[in-house]
Amino acid sequence: MAERETSRDIDQAASDWAARLDRGPLTPNEATAFEAWCAGDPRRKGALLRAQALSVMSESAQALGPDFDPAAFEAPKPTPPGASRRKLLSWGGGAVLSATLVALGLNIPSAGAVIRTGRGEIRLVPLGDGSTVLLNTSSSIRVREGADARVVSLIEGEAYFSVARDPRPFIVEVDGRRLRTGQAGFRVRKLAGKPVDVLVDRGEVDLRTPDPAASASAALLPANSRLVLDESGRPQPIAPEIVTRELAWREGRLAFEGETLAEAAEAFARYSDIRIEIRDPALAREPVTGLFAANDPVGFSRATARVFDARMEQRGDRVVLTRDAAPR
View 1: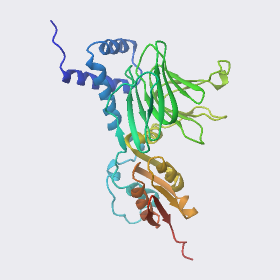
View 2: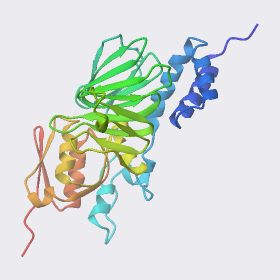
View 3: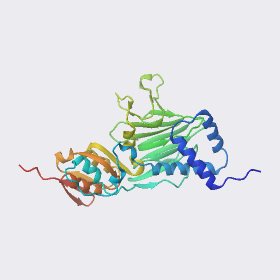
View 4: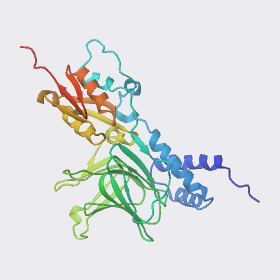
């Protein structure tokens, strides 16, 4: 009689499978082994979900670029003589804090359920097939699983889909389009007033329109590619470090690499009720580089004021940044 697996054995195997799934599509032999493993002890799927959740939470920002040094973001540092403003801002973000993460109450949603996050909340949603959806701030999805397909509709906001292999296709519906895959990791973003933005981290995603005859609108997105779903949008290859910056929100962070201060303030507005107002147009155009806690607009503003010789004043739920005109 075979010995029953211990919880430690199951957790170790789950960690191994989570790491293997994260590296890309399984080979046919691996897929068979994975399906057999999942179909065994009923504790295994829950262990896999925990392993995938911990993997999402612990991914580092080491791919932000070849010169990225995580220690530079841990605490404010003195200003070295002669350092550039672009470099200084990467030192001035203060401690990197995580946004609120409601992730590990691993309850699988019922069919047709709508799952939402509030402002500043990040939530990991496990699905019955072993896939997961990580919801960003102020986002909502509807989940439907059937005999023929696994379907998630992105109603609004932003979500990262980590799709486990399954005989049924995994479909994400957004703005009348369907993103289809067998196994992949990809982000879909739908914000008010902006076109839908799809970024593929690993695997392949097939974009389909409701009209099968509209083949010109179909596209295959490989790993490290991006597609903005506007009238002229086509898949574009992007560097892995850009992918990592775009997905920094999964750890409650915002990563900037040359965006203007005004664009950074708009990004922070998604995560907090505190608004950053920039009174000086020239200051609003200053480029920002660095990694910051998404739920700390005050800390970001303080760093900005220090780096760009500006003044910061907090007035209730507003942070006002101003700068004197340059001396003549």
